[in-house]
Image 1 (spheres, rainbow, N blue to C red):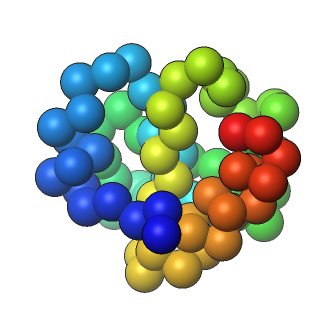
Image 2: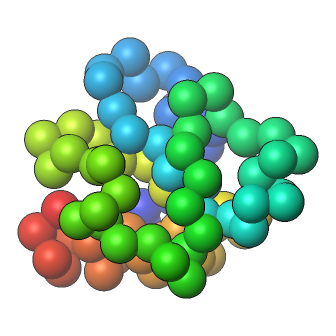
Length: 78
């Protein structure tokens, strides 16, 4: 429901926040330009630097973790 392709993310020219939820060593191997690494187990949207007024993109390997977190964030008003 929440999943987007990397092409869709990169085509979004709005000011946005991109958070890579993978482990730091996985993030170090490469991510999307502008992404910030916050491991999913430690992710706290209120202390992540994310702005509720901007689109928030979450990245992981399969899309499952980011989809679950996106769903939870929507329930919390994000």
